[in-house]
Length: 93
Image 1 (tube, rainbow, N blue to C red):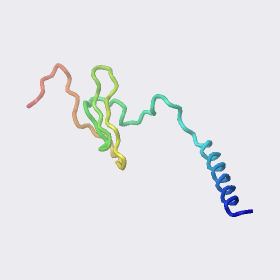
Image 2 (cartoon, helix red, strand yellow):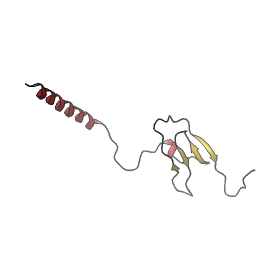
Image 3 (tube, rainbow, N blue to C red):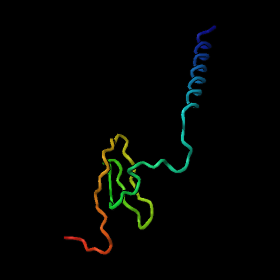
């Protein structure tokens, strides 16, 4: 068998086995992404971060708005960056 045919057969075998392995991977269905803890509205907090994603509470009942995560970011513990101030109380200066 010529060398090019042997290489072609090996290539086809590699593609076939790689495709079979890829079919075994559990890929979640499209739709609502899995909620991660940083994306969940934090109680008594107006803005919060894990030093990769920054989130802010939406207006009365809306979902929080969060930034995208950086490519090489390593999330840390979630911390509040702006405490929620009740509407009836004046801000302290």
